[in-house]
Image (tube, rainbow, N blue to C red):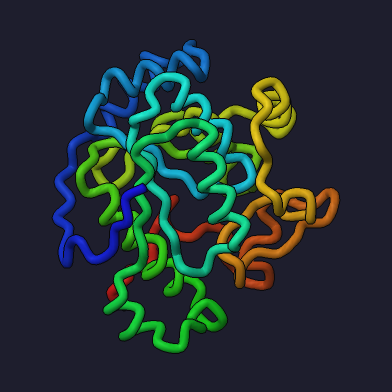
Length: 248
């Protein structure tokens, strides 16, 4: 596991992909199975692609698909320093089980935390700003060496993710969502088929698991992400979609 902290003060994003490239990848893999898509893009983008994982409730599926092809693919995990202890233990268990050899842990910049979240309570009054300095900025640093990344998002997870495409453009990078069209039943079947460990908080009613202060349990029939930032007009951390500028 690689621990990473203050690596870059300024990241100059140089667009590598454009909308035509995204359309080309979408057409090329339109009829491909998920496993074929993952294998294809890892081969196409060798040395240029990383996987990003929260090691949350369903993260094991994508990581298992990747590990079956290449256990040395870089896997990025952002430790916001607000994570559940169960998530950190699950991360280590799953990485060991799958044989992942390049797990890269990135943390918030300690100087930024000291200046903008000295009390460690920004989540309670400005969750967008908290996500910006604890998640968005560290991920930007983590992705600086890469032109593309794989995300574990699924379309069924919430209203903001409906009709999620398999390929997107994200700040000049190719973002790949191999599980975009998977539903809960298919994920559960994959877990059972491959005997993958579940996140320990799932059995306590957590359907979508993020930072501890901003994650709550979900009642039967609720949106899977209803427990994220409950009570706030917020459904995403900023990694996916428009990000809150971490400079403010």
